[in-house]
Image (cartoon, rainbow, N blue to C red):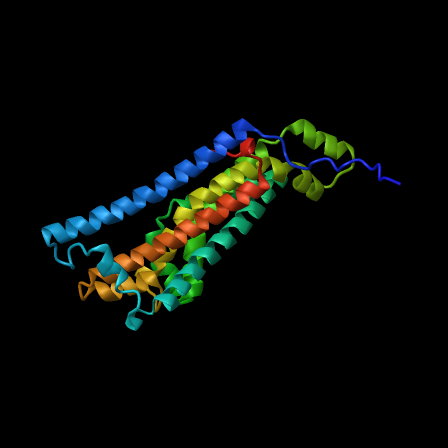
Length: 274
């Protein structure tokens, strides 16, 4: 007997010209960004060679890259040390910033008493605070993590507080009427509504995290890319200094991309703050 079963329905998604056009536009923008960076490097190399600029004034990109295989700089070890300071301080600031903002929304008394103190402490220049932190805790990766944390904490705290306060009060009243506790109100209502603001603060804090780690290494440290820059500066080894700057920049770019990736998975496109 002949099989009369129907053919399976195709699971392919319908063609969406708008989505396709947006995807092509995103690829075009990424390609332009890559090409613009490559063009800048090529022009840089050509200008240095054309005008025969001394290496200690402005090294060519080829001279900068040539420092990578030299073992005396210990690029891997120093990069890992700086990465630990940047990512460790940033993660600590993100967690404590969100938790402190939550505490402020739960207790008006704590907010009135503590928040003005945090504002005052944030006004202290972190470069001036760095030597005191080193006197109190000696120097090393842990101390630089604290300096990085101090740089990142307040931007994340401010944006999170604002996001938690922007939640529709009617939703909070609904959860309260259903006998929901504070933690349920936070996880189901406040946190999802505040996520766009939290990610906005996290993006700003990326720049602060990189600056905080390098400030700590400039003041007093025995390893890291900032420490290496101080060491090679005395010998006017400009190519090694540029290489350190490039690696520091890459660490910041990677952290920023990780934040963008987390935002993409956590929020729909329309909910993201530009």
